[in-house]
Every structure is written in structure tokens, then in C-alpha cells.
Image (cartoon, rainbow over all chains, first blue to last red):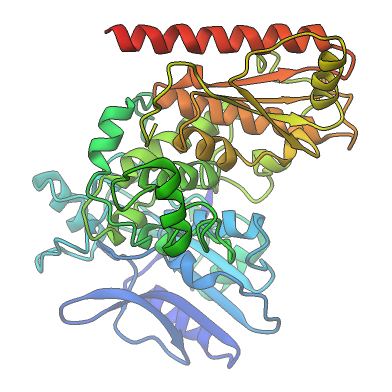
Length: 336
Length: 139
């Protein structure tokens, strides 16, 4: 694997060179005094940070319905965000033409809910920090793909703390050409390695109901999910979860009902609808005001459902989402 | 499930493809064959019209079991609808398995001529659900 080693400050220089063109944008992270957050840079970088140790939202959310031609946007994001972008591209929500997606190795993140000021933004220090502290988000601690191996190019970190730019497609070469230096062989040992998959997810309905008892049906999880993209969601209107008159009619027909009703219905339907595209980023859990362990369920179910079709969300641009394709000769034991 | 079902006899919702399974059920009627009263058929233009959300909705509105039935693979009126159904329902079954309620969902292939097979499949499913329900009540 060939790539270019980044000297200190070289990535900022390269991105500034990219931003010299008026039509070019960079979506990355900005480091303020107290906060690291998403920022779209125009003209020049300002307090740029390559890594963001705090997870608030998945940035693929901001890219939905991006169809304009002529501009170029460089995404400098975490692997889970790039994978969500790839899924949205497959779902025809983003045109790939004007996007250069660069995934950056992710040592893990802390939740924005329990943010601490002492979290470092430098890769080596961050990896050390997570060794000594257990504040890593649950979604990150079970994440099986933290490596920056998706998208058009990747930024990998080696054990010594050097950053490497590695192109995967022709578009990735654009970033590589902006970086000064000669291509070298990337060391085989990297900071963020492959992680093994965890056990098969299994619960019973009683545990599920108990976990979701606190749900207030604010639907923040749906709104913040990067891959839950339908404009006309089935939960708009009164069809699935009746409101007002429709609800009263229903209660007169069926009897007393605990409110808010339909939370299991809502979560199970959403779980199925995102099952093949869920990247397990945990943005839903981040958005939940009640602290429901949503990632455990969504990630667990989606991993099981994806494994039937040996599919992994966001792994490559070429794989088709299993529900929109089929093989004639498969699933022989489907019927009862 | 959300609302307690009062009667002891199970209610089963079936989504039946209008070209095969629904025709088979009509044929069963004209042959004077009986299937349990608790089975309610919903006619759909093709089995792939069944969004798994319908199945989950049916179960949470109080159905004890749901089946999706369509033409045999390769015989779909719309050429390839039931291949998609197969993928979707297999995935849904896997999800139900994760929540330990796999026995609530079944997928059948019944062609328009197989009235007896339809009766057989539906009755077996009904009896299995009924047995489970009675066991649950005793325990």
C-alpha cells in the first residue's frame, strides 16, 4: 500500500490549497476553546482539527439531497460518517460526482452528553486516554470498522503517531496530489486495527419493553439518524400511531391504552427499515433525551440482518442494498 | 400484544397475493373446504407489496400470528416480486428471532390451484399458535 506521510501542519496546507478554488468546500472539524464540532470551511481553514473526540451528530445527515453540480466538497470525516454517506449515495440521496470522501482513522469518541474538557484531539494521546479511561461511547467500543478504509481516500495513523494519506480511487488522488512529499510504503502496523465482531444479538420482548419504557416518542432518533432519510415517513400522520380523533375512535373500539402508545411498534419498524443501512454510529442514542440504549438494539439487529446477505453497510460503493436486489437461487429454507 | 386479547381463540392475519394465494382461498371456498375462523386474509396485489412494517403493525395491534403468502418463486405475475418478498421476510424472521418471537411469522408459497395446500398450511399455523397460546395461559 502506497501513501504519503504527512508532516506537521501539512494536511492544513493541503486543504488550504484545495480551498483556493472558489467552488471548493471542506467539511471537517473545528476546534474551539471548549468544543470540537462540524464545520464547513470556505476560502481557508480556521482552527482545523483532523480528529474529533466528541460525537454529537453524524455529518452524513447534512449531506442528504446534495445534487448540485459544479462545486466540490471534501469530506474529512470519521469512518462511520463516510459509511453513512456511501449508503445514502446508494439510496440516491447524494450525487457522488462532486464529493471527495476521506475517512480518517478513529480511535474512538466520547459522548457529547458527558463531555469532559480534558479529552485530547491528537491521535496518540487519544488512544492513551481511552486505555486509561472507560468514557468511550458504547457504540464506539463495539465498533468493528474504525479504520479509515472507506471512501475515496483514507488517513491512517501508524503506531509512532504519523499520519498517512492513502488514495483508494481516482478522486482520492486529488488529495494525494495536494500533499507535498513522495509516496512511500505505509507501515503494516497501524494504530487502529481490525476488530472482531461480537456475539449474535439476542433479547426477549420483556427486556425490550423494559428498556424502551422511558421512550416519550419524540422521534429524535429518527430525525438524527443519517440513513433514515424518507421525506414521507410512515409515522407522519395517523396511519401507524393514531392521534386525536383517530386515537379516541381506536380506544373506544379496543379499550384502555397506556400512553404514549406504539413505542415498540415505532422502534421495531424503524429498526427493520434501517436494518441494511445502519452503520452503527450511535447518533440515535446521542439524540435520545431519555438515555435509551438504542445502539445496542439497532446495531445488534442490523448486524444480524446484514449477515444473512453477507452485506456490510458502507463497505463499498459497488454492493447493492440487499432488499432491492435478489438472486433466483437462494434462501431455500425461507418458507415454512 | 399491546392490548390484551380477550378471546382464547387466536387471531391470524394473512397477507395473500391476489393472483395465487387469494385465488387458492377462493377455490377452497368453492370446494367447501373449511379453514379456521380466526384467519383473516388481506388481499394484496403482490406479496412484495407487504412492507414488513405491516407485519409488525399487525402483531402490535393484537394479531397472534401473521403469514405472508405468495406465488412460488418464478411464478410471480410481476415476474420477480416474490424474490424480493423472500429476502424481506427472511430478514424480518431473523429480526423476530432476535426478539424471541420467531413463531409468530410464516411465509408460504401457494399457487392458485393449491387449495388443499392452502388449507393445510393455514390450519397447521393456526393450531400451532393456538397450542402455544393455551400453554402460555396455563403457565
